[in-house]
Structure formats: C-alpha cells, structure tokens
Image 1 (tube, one colour):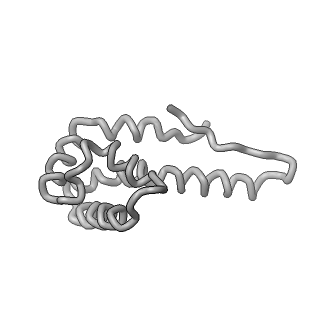
Image 2 (image 1 turned 90 degrees about the vertical axis):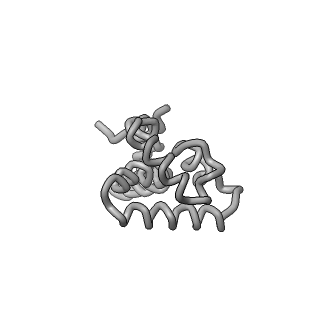
Length: 110
C-alpha cells in the first residue's frame, strides 16, 4: 500500500486553503497573477518559466509558513510543490534497496 498525492491535490481546493490563498494573494504581489494554489503549483513545476519569480514566490511562502497559525496549512501546498522531487527520491530509494533485476516506475495518480 503506497502513498498517494491525490488527497493533497484535493486539499488544495479546500475552503480553508482557498481563504488562506485569497488573504496571502492580497498581501503578496508575487501571487497576484495566479488564480489559486493549483496555478501556483503548476507554475513552480514548469521547468521553462521564470526561476527568479519562482524563487520569490517560494521564499514568500516559506516566510508565511514560519509565521505559524493558519499559515501552517501551507504544509499541504509544499507537499504539492515538492511532489516531483519526493516521488523521484522515493523511487530512487526503492531502486537502491531492490535486487538488480527488479525495477519500479513511479505511479502517478490523477
């Protein structure tokens, strides 16, 4: 039984995270061009777009998270942001513990 990110992606649409997004969007000009958390995550996953803006967005999100309170909900957003790296590291770790003949490919849920 494996871990799935589908629940994390569903949580991005939750009422609580939606309210948090609107509040942070009003406070942070770097979020102004994104409609919701899924748009932010998609932008951060895009390997062909603005690394400078990505750094600024991620830095601001980390600053908000460190404030605590309802900003701790950003943990869910960070899991979605770092999903590709988490999956890659997990698969790489599994591959190093399996016999040489065994292979595993990352399973992505919709």
